[in-house]
Image 1: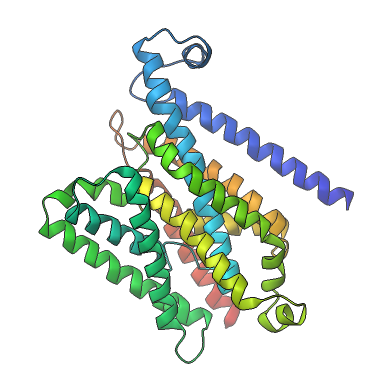
Image 2: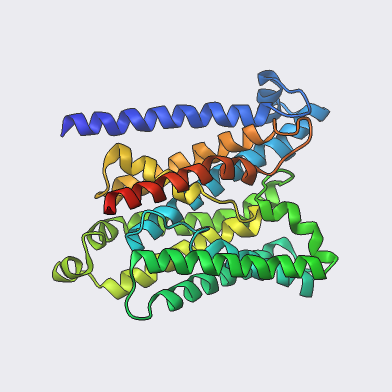
Length: 332
């Protein structure tokens, strides 16, 4: 028992250290040269210089946003994998991101004067609709892992095609092409204020139901035998996924693969049964992954910015193929 606690504390301190270093890198690295002194001065002794303004108004909120979005998507992915007992589940694979993107893009076409704070509601609605459509298609004749994966990918491709059609047909929607790849550059404190309340609600709700999820993953018959209300927890967890993924898409676009990669890494370290450990560490590891992916995205076309979604896709696509191949080998 003591050894497991040492492991938990050790991994936590290592991840926290990596997060601090990554956040510092996110604040200091960019086209405008800044140093540690500039960063400290911007926090405690602002003098209005260009470098400090860049740190305070652009880079610091960008780093905070990367942490929040990474935590949101990783926890949403962990919840979806637990809910479906499918290791390939994630907000992107199961149509949640695509549904949110479609409704956001269409709302921007229909209501071009819409404020950023209103966009989050359309994203939540789209995430909910995307998830409902996937479950509707997969539930006919009984839900299985394969049917969920196939339905999720089919709905994701269909909704993404509709989104592209909106962009082609509307001049106003072409401005969101960059956003559709998944981007957090150019964001400021107003975007942090938009996502922060939703993130707090979603993450706290996820942690509060972690014990119930640990029982749920044992199987529906076992969970019911232990007194768990399976339908209630399924609906509640689905709403949490919608809140976390939808609010992230509203602010940063449909960033893929974070919710797929991180839960696997956490379960590899701590095992797959205890979600009181898996969910908090998924949030922490998701923040670390997103911060470093954002830093790497700045070198793709330096000194110009590139969407962080490019980096997560470069990492996540091979990881997805590896998991799919591993799953096939295990079944054969």
